[in-house]
Length: 406
Image 1 (cartoon, rainbow, N blue to C red):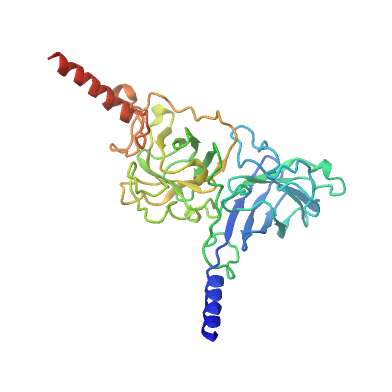
Image 2: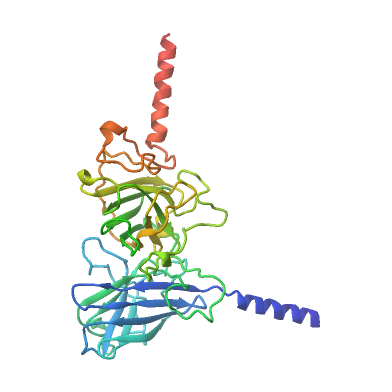
Protein backbone atom coordinates (compact mmCIF):
# COMPACT_ATOMS: atom_id res chain seq x y z
CA UNK A 1 0.00 0.00 0.00
CA UNK A 2 2.86 2.33 0.89
CA UNK A 3 4.55 1.52 -2.45
CA UNK A 4 1.35 2.42 -4.32
CA UNK A 5 1.12 5.73 -2.46
CA UNK A 6 4.73 6.55 -3.32
CA UNK A 7 4.12 5.72 -6.99
CA UNK A 8 1.01 7.92 -7.11
CA UNK A 9 2.96 10.73 -5.47
CA UNK A 10 5.79 10.44 -8.01
CA UNK A 11 3.32 10.37 -10.90
CA UNK A 12 1.64 13.52 -9.59
CA UNK A 13 5.02 15.27 -9.26
CA UNK A 14 5.97 14.30 -12.82
CA UNK A 15 2.61 15.47 -14.18
CA UNK A 16 3.03 18.83 -12.43
CA UNK A 17 6.58 19.17 -13.71
CA UNK A 18 5.46 18.61 -17.29
CA UNK A 19 2.18 20.55 -17.24
CA UNK A 20 1.56 22.06 -20.66
CA UNK A 21 0.31 25.61 -21.00
CA UNK A 22 -0.86 27.99 -23.72
CA UNK A 23 0.93 31.24 -24.42
CA UNK A 24 0.23 33.85 -27.13
CA UNK A 25 1.68 37.23 -28.04
CA UNK A 26 0.01 40.28 -29.55
CA UNK A 27 2.01 43.31 -30.79
CA UNK A 28 -0.02 46.47 -31.26
CA UNK A 29 -0.06 48.19 -34.63
CA UNK A 30 0.12 51.96 -34.63
CA UNK A 31 -2.80 53.53 -36.47
CA UNK A 32 -2.94 57.14 -37.68
CA UNK A 33 -4.23 58.18 -34.26
CA UNK A 34 -3.30 57.13 -30.76
CA UNK A 35 0.42 56.51 -31.13
CA UNK A 36 0.07 53.14 -29.38
CA UNK A 37 3.25 51.12 -28.86
CA UNK A 38 3.36 47.90 -26.90
CA UNK A 39 1.91 44.43 -26.65
CA UNK A 40 -0.28 41.97 -24.78
CA UNK A 41 0.77 38.65 -23.25
CA UNK A 42 -1.89 35.91 -23.19
CA UNK A 43 -1.36 32.98 -20.84
CA UNK A 44 -3.43 30.00 -19.74
CA UNK A 45 -1.78 27.64 -17.27
CA UNK A 46 -4.84 25.48 -16.60
CA UNK A 47 -6.49 25.47 -20.05
CA UNK A 48 -9.58 27.15 -18.55
CA UNK A 49 -8.80 30.72 -17.49
CA UNK A 50 -7.06 33.12 -19.86
CA UNK A 51 -4.99 35.96 -18.42
CA UNK A 52 -4.32 38.88 -20.77
CA UNK A 53 -1.61 41.25 -19.55
CA UNK A 54 -1.37 44.64 -21.28
CA UNK A 55 1.73 46.83 -21.55
CA UNK A 56 1.59 49.82 -23.89
CA UNK A 57 2.13 53.55 -24.19
CA UNK A 58 -0.10 56.07 -25.97
CA UNK A 59 -0.35 59.77 -26.75
CA UNK A 60 -3.61 59.96 -24.78
CA UNK A 61 -1.96 61.37 -21.67
CA UNK A 62 -5.30 62.41 -20.15
CA UNK A 63 -6.84 58.93 -20.19
CA UNK A 64 -7.40 56.98 -16.99
CA UNK A 65 -8.77 53.92 -18.78
CA UNK A 66 -9.14 52.33 -22.21
CA UNK A 67 -11.74 49.88 -23.46
CA UNK A 68 -10.47 46.63 -25.00
CA UNK A 69 -12.30 44.05 -27.12
CA UNK A 70 -11.51 40.80 -28.91
CA UNK A 71 -12.73 41.10 -32.50
CA UNK A 72 -13.61 38.30 -34.92
CA UNK A 73 -10.80 38.84 -37.43
CA UNK A 74 -7.10 39.49 -37.07
CA UNK A 75 -6.69 41.81 -40.04
CA UNK A 76 -8.64 43.50 -42.82
CA UNK A 77 -6.73 44.14 -46.08
CA UNK A 78 -9.02 47.03 -47.03
CA UNK A 79 -9.93 48.68 -43.71
CA UNK A 80 -7.65 48.66 -40.68
CA UNK A 81 -10.46 49.42 -38.22
CA UNK A 82 -13.10 47.03 -39.61
CA UNK A 83 -12.18 43.74 -37.97
CA UNK A 84 -15.64 42.25 -37.71
CA UNK A 85 -17.97 42.00 -34.75
CA UNK A 86 -16.98 41.43 -31.15
CA UNK A 87 -15.98 37.76 -30.75
CA UNK A 88 -19.13 35.99 -29.54
CA UNK A 89 -18.95 32.20 -30.12
CA UNK A 90 -21.69 31.47 -27.55
CA UNK A 91 -24.12 34.00 -29.10
CA UNK A 92 -24.69 36.17 -26.04
CA UNK A 93 -25.43 39.07 -28.42
CA UNK A 94 -25.37 41.68 -25.64
CA UNK A 95 -22.44 43.92 -24.78
CA UNK A 96 -21.19 43.89 -21.22
CA UNK A 97 -18.31 44.05 -18.76
CA UNK A 98 -16.45 41.03 -17.33
CA UNK A 99 -18.22 41.47 -13.98
CA UNK A 100 -21.51 40.57 -15.67
CA UNK A 101 -22.35 38.11 -18.45
CA UNK A 102 -20.71 39.67 -21.49
CA UNK A 103 -19.79 38.37 -24.91
CA UNK A 104 -16.51 36.45 -24.99
CA UNK A 105 -14.79 39.39 -26.64
CA UNK A 106 -15.82 42.01 -24.07
CA UNK A 107 -12.56 42.51 -22.18
CA UNK A 108 -13.69 45.62 -20.32
CA UNK A 109 -11.65 48.58 -19.08
CA UNK A 110 -7.88 48.73 -18.72
CA UNK A 111 -6.55 51.15 -16.10
CA UNK A 112 -4.12 53.78 -17.42
CA UNK A 113 -1.72 56.19 -15.77
CA UNK A 114 -0.96 59.27 -17.85
CA UNK A 115 -2.25 57.50 -20.92
CA UNK A 116 0.03 54.49 -20.40
CA UNK A 117 -0.89 50.95 -19.35
CA UNK A 118 1.59 48.91 -17.34
CA UNK A 119 1.15 45.22 -16.44
CA UNK A 120 -2.65 45.33 -16.31
CA UNK A 121 -4.08 41.79 -16.27
CA UNK A 122 -7.65 40.84 -17.23
CA UNK A 123 -8.89 37.29 -16.57
CA UNK A 124 -11.45 35.72 -18.92
CA UNK A 125 -13.04 32.27 -19.01
CA UNK A 126 -14.72 31.77 -22.41
CA UNK A 127 -12.10 32.83 -24.96
CA UNK A 128 -8.97 30.72 -25.02
CA UNK A 129 -5.86 30.10 -27.11
CA UNK A 130 -6.06 26.33 -27.57
CA UNK A 131 -7.46 24.14 -30.34
CA UNK A 132 -11.20 24.57 -29.95
CA UNK A 133 -14.01 26.78 -31.24
CA UNK A 134 -13.32 29.51 -28.65
CA UNK A 135 -9.70 30.02 -29.69
CA UNK A 136 -8.73 33.63 -30.46
CA UNK A 137 -5.41 32.74 -32.10
CA UNK A 138 -5.36 34.66 -35.40
CA UNK A 139 -8.06 37.09 -34.24
CA UNK A 140 -7.43 40.61 -32.91
CA UNK A 141 -7.50 42.66 -29.71
CA UNK A 142 -8.58 46.27 -30.21
CA UNK A 143 -7.91 49.28 -27.98
CA UNK A 144 -10.31 52.27 -27.92
CA UNK A 145 -9.84 55.91 -26.94
CA UNK A 146 -12.67 55.71 -24.40
CA UNK A 147 -13.90 53.14 -21.90
CA UNK A 148 -16.86 50.84 -21.30
CA UNK A 149 -19.86 52.22 -19.44
CA UNK A 150 -20.39 49.17 -17.26
CA UNK A 151 -23.49 50.70 -15.69
CA UNK A 152 -25.05 50.74 -19.15
CA UNK A 153 -23.35 47.95 -21.14
CA UNK A 154 -25.65 48.47 -24.13
CA UNK A 155 -23.45 51.46 -24.98
CA UNK A 156 -20.54 49.08 -25.47
CA UNK A 157 -17.33 51.10 -25.91
CA UNK A 158 -16.93 54.85 -25.99
CA UNK A 159 -14.56 56.39 -28.51
CA UNK A 160 -12.67 55.24 -31.60
CA UNK A 161 -10.31 52.32 -32.16
CA UNK A 162 -6.75 53.62 -31.70
CA UNK A 163 -4.86 50.37 -32.16
CA UNK A 164 -5.19 46.62 -32.59
CA UNK A 165 -2.96 43.55 -32.59
CA UNK A 166 -3.16 40.11 -34.17
CA UNK A 167 -3.00 37.27 -31.63
CA UNK A 168 -0.23 34.86 -32.61
CA UNK A 169 1.20 31.73 -31.04
CA UNK A 170 3.77 33.12 -28.58
CA UNK A 171 7.44 32.30 -28.21
CA UNK A 172 8.02 32.29 -24.48
CA UNK A 173 11.81 32.40 -24.95
CA UNK A 174 11.78 35.77 -26.73
CA UNK A 175 8.85 37.88 -25.61
CA UNK A 176 10.20 38.96 -22.20
CA UNK A 177 7.44 37.19 -20.27
CA UNK A 178 8.39 35.68 -16.91
CA UNK A 179 8.42 31.94 -17.58
CA UNK A 180 10.05 30.72 -14.36
CA UNK A 181 6.87 28.95 -13.20
CA UNK A 182 5.95 27.49 -16.58
CA UNK A 183 6.76 23.88 -17.45
CA UNK A 184 5.87 21.51 -20.26
CA UNK A 185 5.35 22.91 -23.77
CA UNK A 186 3.30 25.69 -25.30
CA UNK A 187 0.21 24.15 -26.96
CA UNK A 188 -1.40 27.40 -28.15
CA UNK A 189 -3.17 26.93 -31.47
CA UNK A 190 -5.89 28.23 -33.74
CA UNK A 191 -9.03 26.13 -34.09
CA UNK A 192 -7.92 23.36 -36.46
CA UNK A 193 -11.49 22.62 -37.63
CA UNK A 194 -12.30 26.21 -38.56
CA UNK A 195 -14.29 25.94 -41.79
CA UNK A 196 -13.29 27.90 -44.91
CA UNK A 197 -10.54 29.68 -43.06
CA UNK A 198 -8.56 32.37 -44.87
CA UNK A 199 -5.18 33.45 -43.53
CA UNK A 200 -3.26 36.57 -44.56
CA UNK A 201 0.24 37.55 -43.47
CA UNK A 202 1.52 41.08 -43.96
CA UNK A 203 5.30 40.70 -44.18
CA UNK A 204 7.84 43.47 -43.61
CA UNK A 205 11.60 43.63 -43.61
CA UNK A 206 13.63 42.69 -40.55
CA UNK A 207 16.86 44.34 -39.42
CA UNK A 208 18.94 41.90 -41.46
CA UNK A 209 17.20 42.58 -44.78
CA UNK A 210 19.36 41.81 -47.82
CA UNK A 211 17.74 44.33 -50.15
CA UNK A 212 15.54 47.39 -50.07
CA UNK A 213 12.45 47.95 -47.96
CA UNK A 214 10.39 44.74 -48.16
CA UNK A 215 6.64 44.56 -47.90
CA UNK A 216 4.00 42.22 -49.20
CA UNK A 217 1.17 39.81 -48.54
CA UNK A 218 0.92 36.03 -48.30
CA UNK A 219 -2.53 34.47 -48.65
CA UNK A 220 -3.69 31.00 -47.49
CA UNK A 221 -7.10 30.10 -48.85
CA UNK A 222 -9.11 26.88 -48.91
CA UNK A 223 -9.94 25.58 -52.42
CA UNK A 224 -11.97 22.58 -51.25
CA UNK A 225 -12.13 20.28 -48.23
CA UNK A 226 -8.54 19.12 -48.74
CA UNK A 227 -6.52 21.63 -50.75
CA UNK A 228 -5.45 25.19 -50.07
CA UNK A 229 -4.11 27.83 -52.40
CA UNK A 230 -0.98 29.66 -51.22
CA UNK A 231 -0.21 32.87 -53.10
CA UNK A 232 2.11 35.78 -52.40
CA UNK A 233 3.01 39.18 -53.77
CA UNK A 234 6.13 40.77 -52.26
CA UNK A 235 8.21 43.75 -53.36
CA UNK A 236 11.72 44.84 -52.40
CA UNK A 237 13.47 41.45 -52.43
CA UNK A 238 16.97 41.11 -53.85
CA UNK A 239 16.98 39.42 -57.27
CA UNK A 240 17.55 35.81 -56.33
CA UNK A 241 15.63 32.87 -54.93
CA UNK A 242 14.55 33.18 -51.30
CA UNK A 243 13.47 30.41 -48.93
CA UNK A 244 9.79 30.76 -48.06
CA UNK A 245 8.34 29.16 -44.91
CA UNK A 246 5.66 29.14 -42.22
CA UNK A 247 7.30 29.24 -38.78
CA UNK A 248 6.14 27.89 -35.44
CA UNK A 249 5.36 31.18 -33.67
CA UNK A 250 3.35 34.23 -34.67
CA UNK A 251 5.57 36.28 -32.37
CA UNK A 252 7.32 39.29 -33.92
CA UNK A 253 8.64 40.64 -30.64
CA UNK A 254 12.18 40.73 -32.08
CA UNK A 255 13.04 42.76 -35.18
CA UNK A 256 15.59 40.23 -36.49
CA UNK A 257 12.98 37.54 -37.18
CA UNK A 258 14.28 35.09 -34.58
CA UNK A 259 11.22 35.15 -32.31
CA UNK A 260 9.06 33.38 -34.91
CA UNK A 261 11.12 30.26 -34.12
CA UNK A 262 11.81 27.31 -36.39
CA UNK A 263 9.67 25.87 -39.14
CA UNK A 264 6.15 24.76 -38.28
CA UNK A 265 6.31 20.95 -38.24
CA UNK A 266 4.90 17.74 -36.83
CA UNK A 267 6.76 14.81 -35.31
CA UNK A 268 8.57 12.73 -37.92
CA UNK A 269 8.75 15.46 -40.54
CA UNK A 270 12.10 16.63 -41.95
CA UNK A 271 13.04 19.68 -43.97
CA UNK A 272 12.58 19.26 -47.73
CA UNK A 273 11.26 21.01 -50.81
CA UNK A 274 7.72 20.50 -52.15
CA UNK A 275 6.20 18.16 -53.14
CA UNK A 276 8.06 15.85 -50.71
CA UNK A 277 5.28 14.36 -48.57
CA UNK A 278 7.40 14.16 -45.40
CA UNK A 279 8.46 17.82 -45.47
CA UNK A 280 7.70 20.25 -42.65
CA UNK A 281 4.20 21.71 -42.63
CA UNK A 282 5.92 25.05 -43.10
CA UNK A 283 8.09 24.10 -46.10
CA UNK A 284 6.88 25.94 -49.20
CA UNK A 285 10.08 26.01 -51.23
CA UNK A 286 11.28 29.31 -52.63
CA UNK A 287 10.08 32.73 -53.61
CA UNK A 288 11.66 33.85 -56.88
CA UNK A 289 12.33 37.59 -56.92
CA UNK A 290 11.98 39.46 -60.18
CA UNK A 291 13.52 42.51 -61.80
CA UNK A 292 12.18 46.03 -62.24
CA UNK A 293 10.40 45.23 -65.50
CA UNK A 294 8.00 43.32 -63.24
CA UNK A 295 7.63 46.51 -61.16
CA UNK A 296 10.08 45.20 -58.55
CA UNK A 297 7.53 42.64 -57.40
CA UNK A 298 7.82 38.88 -56.98
CA UNK A 299 4.99 36.35 -57.06
CA UNK A 300 4.34 32.92 -55.59
CA UNK A 301 1.58 30.37 -56.20
CA UNK A 302 1.17 26.82 -54.92
CA UNK A 303 -1.68 24.38 -54.26
CA UNK A 304 -1.32 21.76 -51.54
CA UNK A 305 -3.13 19.36 -49.23
CA UNK A 306 -0.08 19.04 -46.98
CA UNK A 307 -1.47 21.51 -44.42
CA UNK A 308 -4.71 23.45 -43.94
CA UNK A 309 -5.23 27.20 -43.74
CA UNK A 310 -6.74 26.83 -40.26
CA UNK A 311 -3.54 25.24 -38.91
CA UNK A 312 -1.19 27.99 -40.09
CA UNK A 313 -3.32 30.88 -38.79
CA UNK A 314 -1.59 32.59 -35.88
CA UNK A 315 1.85 31.34 -36.88
CA UNK A 316 4.78 33.22 -38.38
CA UNK A 317 5.63 33.78 -42.04
CA UNK A 318 9.20 34.36 -43.21
CA UNK A 319 11.12 35.01 -46.40
CA UNK A 320 14.83 34.18 -46.11
CA UNK A 321 17.87 35.93 -47.53
CA UNK A 322 18.99 33.03 -49.73
CA UNK A 323 17.82 29.93 -51.58
CA UNK A 324 16.30 26.93 -49.83
CA UNK A 325 17.97 23.96 -51.56
CA UNK A 326 16.13 21.36 -49.50
CA UNK A 327 19.00 21.10 -47.02
CA UNK A 328 20.00 24.67 -46.15
CA UNK A 329 16.84 26.67 -45.50
CA UNK A 330 18.06 30.00 -46.86
CA UNK A 331 19.88 31.80 -44.06
CA UNK A 332 18.56 34.67 -41.97
CA UNK A 333 15.00 35.99 -42.25
CA UNK A 334 14.79 39.17 -44.33
CA UNK A 335 11.04 39.63 -43.75
CA UNK A 336 8.47 38.37 -41.29
CA UNK A 337 4.79 38.58 -40.38
CA UNK A 338 1.93 36.93 -38.49
CA UNK A 339 -0.76 34.94 -40.35
CA UNK A 340 -4.08 36.58 -39.40
CA UNK A 341 -7.61 35.29 -39.87
CA UNK A 342 -9.45 37.45 -42.42
CA UNK A 343 -13.08 37.58 -43.54
CA UNK A 344 -13.22 38.29 -47.27
CA UNK A 345 -13.87 35.03 -49.15
CA UNK A 346 -13.34 36.87 -52.45
CA UNK A 347 -10.07 38.53 -51.50
CA UNK A 348 -7.29 37.87 -54.00
CA UNK A 349 -3.72 39.08 -54.52
CA UNK A 350 -4.36 39.35 -58.29
CA UNK A 351 -1.45 37.12 -59.22
CA UNK A 352 -0.79 37.20 -63.00
CA UNK A 353 -2.28 34.12 -64.66
CA UNK A 354 0.44 33.93 -67.33
CA UNK A 355 3.35 33.61 -64.94
CA UNK A 356 5.34 30.41 -64.41
CA UNK A 357 5.28 29.41 -60.73
CA UNK A 358 8.62 27.89 -59.78
CA UNK A 359 8.91 26.84 -56.15
CA UNK A 360 12.39 25.45 -56.74
CA UNK A 361 13.73 28.52 -58.60
CA UNK A 362 16.17 26.45 -60.64
CA UNK A 363 17.48 29.55 -62.38
CA UNK A 364 17.79 31.55 -59.16
CA UNK A 365 15.48 34.35 -60.22
CA UNK A 366 13.69 35.56 -63.31
CA UNK A 367 14.04 38.86 -65.09
CA UNK A 368 10.63 39.68 -66.49
CA UNK A 369 10.21 36.41 -68.42
CA UNK A 370 6.62 35.25 -68.66
CA UNK A 371 4.73 32.20 -69.76
CA UNK A 372 5.23 32.64 -73.49
CA UNK A 373 8.90 31.77 -73.13
CA UNK A 374 8.80 29.63 -69.99
CA UNK A 375 5.95 27.11 -70.45
CA UNK A 376 3.58 28.25 -67.71
CA UNK A 377 2.15 25.67 -65.35
CA UNK A 378 0.40 25.54 -61.99
CA UNK A 379 2.44 23.93 -59.22
CA UNK A 380 0.69 21.70 -56.70
CA UNK A 381 0.93 18.56 -54.61
CA UNK A 382 -0.85 16.60 -57.39
CA UNK A 383 -4.21 18.18 -56.80
CA UNK A 384 -6.95 16.28 -58.69
CA UNK A 385 -7.76 18.26 -61.81
CA UNK A 386 -4.51 20.22 -61.76
CA UNK A 387 -2.28 20.44 -64.81
CA UNK A 388 0.08 17.86 -63.32
CA UNK A 389 -2.63 15.21 -63.81
CA UNK A 390 -4.59 16.55 -66.78
CA UNK A 391 -1.66 16.92 -69.19
CA UNK A 392 -0.45 13.28 -68.88
CA UNK A 393 -4.06 12.09 -69.15
CA UNK A 394 -4.68 13.86 -72.47
CA UNK A 395 -1.25 12.83 -73.74
CA UNK A 396 -2.16 9.20 -73.09
CA UNK A 397 -5.45 9.58 -75.01
CA UNK A 398 -3.71 11.17 -78.01
CA UNK A 399 -1.02 8.49 -78.02
CA UNK A 400 -3.68 5.75 -77.90
CA UNK A 401 -5.56 7.25 -80.87
CA UNK A 402 -2.40 7.52 -82.95
CA UNK A 403 -1.45 3.92 -82.06
CA UNK A 404 -4.93 2.66 -83.10
CA UNK A 405 -4.69 4.37 -86.48
CA UNK A 406 -1.33 2.79 -87.33
